[in-house]
Image 1 (cartoon, rainbow, N blue to C red):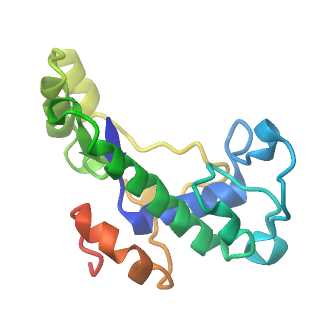
Image 2: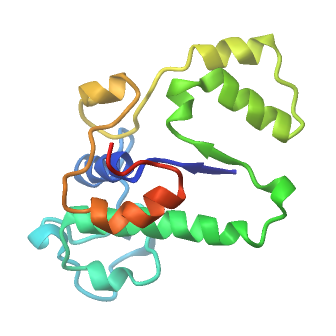
Length: 174
């Protein structure tokens, strides 16, 4: 199952995660893998460690802005997932939109359950109809998160993420 999310919103959320960590710890990778093999000075040295994941080519971003790093991570993760789709039988590929969890949760989950041949009863329908956004990022949620969306990333990266946004069905101009 692949859950896609608007790049602008996801990049903004990832930036919050880099800055604030998790409610139960943090997302930085050295806690799992130890010191990095080369110096990291992201965002002018604000970050000396990577958070979330390392995609192929991560070293090229060791001295980039946080927004560039998060855009790279969003692009890499989604491109890797979409590339993997080619090797997965179509009947086994389930692709969901993160935004649908808040905009049309019952319909989205019902379609996913049916696709997976899993019963979708009244209890599940009720649960899906009453979903509320949550965040594991430390700190106060942005007001927009309470409404089910995240503040969008600044203007620096929509051109970079535009092609994949279009491929994934998002309007990068809205």
